Length: 459
Image (cartoon, rainbow, N blue to C red; front, side):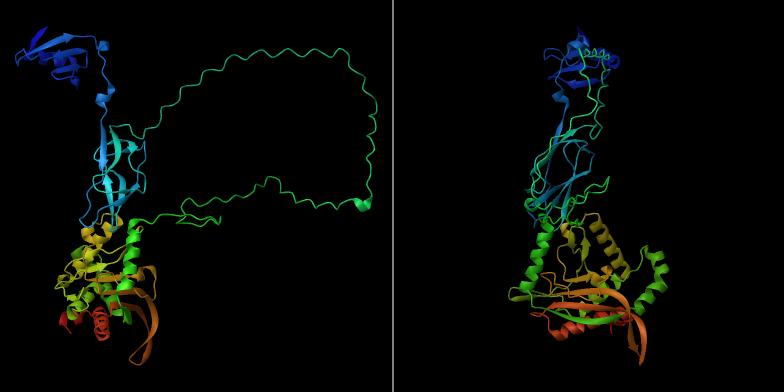
């Protein structure tokens, strides 16, 4: 029948919304009404056919959408990475949930899902090397992922018990049982001299005791079970890059380390006296790293050579101070950079370090956060280190090593007293930095931390 657009609107309200498109100019309603728009009809007319709903058959493939996720683009200096899967086939995912991570030379790039659904297929294996644009996995769009399997159908009731078998017929005639059994046949005895000695019997295990079987550890990086087995694990890309850069630093730089000790009494008292006011004004606690970062920036402005770098046959002097702060993460050592530290105060430094630390903890550091840097500070004291010689972070020319604070006897004004002391170390490239400049630089840091008035008065 023919129907106008107004008639069709009323019919649609009665039958329910359209479910899916079948072909061009055709649709089916939820109550089995087939609607067709023919070319020869006007824009205001439709051909409506009343068809029983059970007479319409459509394929379900038209309603199932599969989304293919691809490897995202990397930074300019990175061309490939290794896949580490967080989800497996059959797992449910939600929008923006991380399905895998791409481990690159500098950082891990999370790959979030753009749709909600169920992982249908992994297109690359775990640990495979991929580049931007590589297809990673297929996700079947829709809810229901991760749902428990349907309960099994109830088992049919057992059939009626079969009748017991008839008893076997009794023996026709039972033989009479003798009163006494016949004697056993005699066993020939060998001469005593020819008998081999009997082996001692092994001790029997106690009743109920089971042998202890040791299994290899599930994660060989966290425990040793004593099974004397070996496990070969591929190094991730970040660890490979760290290894190559550290070896490059040893092979390239003429590294030399100078040491000094630092009395932490004044900075600890300054922190104690002003902590409440500092938190009230800036909303963050004052730590020791801000004092060392600010003191290092001050010392670098006094010794620009330590802030410079060798490039071929040239020396490049930088008119800015970008300090890399070494941070240990479960996947390796990363060195995010604080920019323009020469113009920062204690509060700015604390906020910058806190922001970078939060990014490192949540694995959100970008390559841009770690590029550059003119000087590095490594704080092994957080792990209780007493003494150490840090390795230069190439292409920089020096690195400061902080260590643990321990009370030691020292001489002050001719008297032996107990003070909280820290050893500090400066490893520098002797090709560019002379010993006099390195020692002067380290003493400047020592004086600025022990008495911040040195920086205030430019002493």
